[in-house]
Length: 288
Image (cartoon, rainbow, N blue to C red; front, side, top):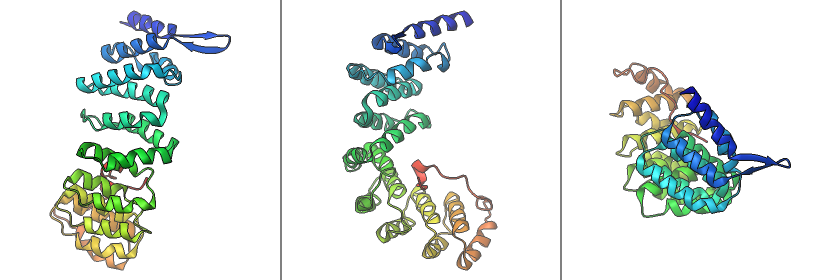
């Protein structure tokens, strides 16, 4: 097996040559080698990292159709490792123009945490905030719930104050995951009264995860008037919500929060007696 790995690694390295100090890549051959690696999984990532880097920086846009076709194949096969490799190459070659393809890939649930894919998306968002935001607004107002969720989640990284009305409306969507994403991405409720009102209203949402997201956002506002609505939620039927309320009230502090915090310390479920696990930015709307 070790001999095979060394042989495969050598094949990868042959796809990249140096000509008068300039790295030249056989892009088609390198892509074929990358696909084989993602399918066969017989060698380590370290053996192909140079090939991945070279492909990502080669600027060969003629590869885009093949990359998109391969990405679709890996999505259909549930190969999230292959998805991430191809998405990284696409992002490197296309830049922000590849964002819609990556968002659609993210909308396909393959059962993983998507850390690598989301990192690629976030990097593209920060590379060109204005262009990214225009694309995301189309996703966020589309007809497909899965794509709306992706657009709303990503919009939180490039959100502008004028997006508050769109996000407040999305916070009343029929899809609870859309509502949760909207609350997580809404402009900072610490200084925006419309956003603050939408988040307070979401504390009464019938979906547990939306209430968790709303409590989390309020906990980071530092606003004294966020305490009362959180205190009112301290007796929520869902342990996860009560736990997040305790976390949020603990961050806000103040005399008004103390009685509710003391009650939550004695929570019979034991879930609020200690700080909850910090919610993910994707689901619970922690500040970015």
